[in-house]
Image 1: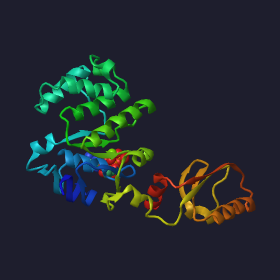
Image 2: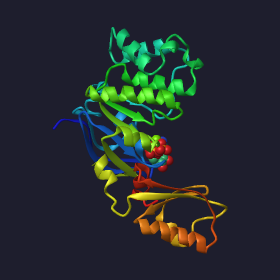
Image 3: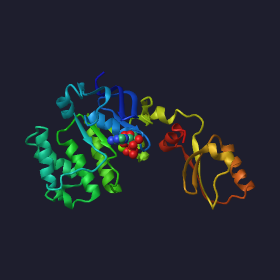
Image 4: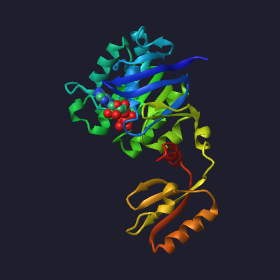
Length: 299
Ligand SMILES: Nc1ncnc2c1ncn2[C@@H]1O[C@H](COP(=O)(O)OP(=O)(O)OP(=O)(O)O)[C@@H](O)[C@H]1O
Ligand SMILES: [Mg+2]
């Protein structure tokens, strides 16, 4: 089996704080993998380690190349879209991509640059100074920068934060096409519906530790405790204590509760009635990837 990315016993400390705690996983070539985790879980720390920005202990190989010992070959084999926007503000979009190509020793790639710009909806900004780009456009330019050398491994650290719905759709079509052409994709995002739509496999990072790599099907079916959820919006009330352990997610007065069986709905509604809790809105849904993720984290 050939791997695009191999992470072996990787740990990372910032002074005394352990950000990555003995991480181990391998990503097969051609896979599309979602790396999930709440804020501070260690996703960017791991990506910085792969990129050679962070010092770490353990071993990381990209397309078989050790990122420390074979740094240049490893770097040529990957394209990373960082979470933070960082673009030189004295260049046009086209100049930015030509300079990036030069860094990777790629010549005569005008056709590819034009295709990237087209697929990322940036063609009309080709000769615009990067200072004059909107936040979402800057983010797309960073994606373009990561792709100039057609890297076999593409790592995306929240690439669609701040990108509008229409362009996000075009963006994901482009990334999916690249995946179908054989590029391996590692994605972190907080938009879990994107992970549900795009990724074949999932790894959860939690407080610097990585869970087992699972297919999306395995991930969705790891919990047999519920299949459906009840979403209720309450009028000036919180859920009764008896239901607290069923809460998967809460946003203001809206709660998502696990439903173990259809009887559960009746029990829950009875409890609201007994306690005079008024309901503004109610919905029954099939469990989503986000529900499983929340359950997995133990809320
Ligand atoms: N340069 C640094 N110095 C000290 N601590 C750091 C540094 N960078 C990250 N950390 C800490 O390491 C932990 C992991 O951070 P990291 O940025 O990897 O999380 P993340 O999973 O990418 O989160 P997010 O979803 O918010 O991007 C956090 O507790 C963070 O405060
Ligand atoms: Mg991050």
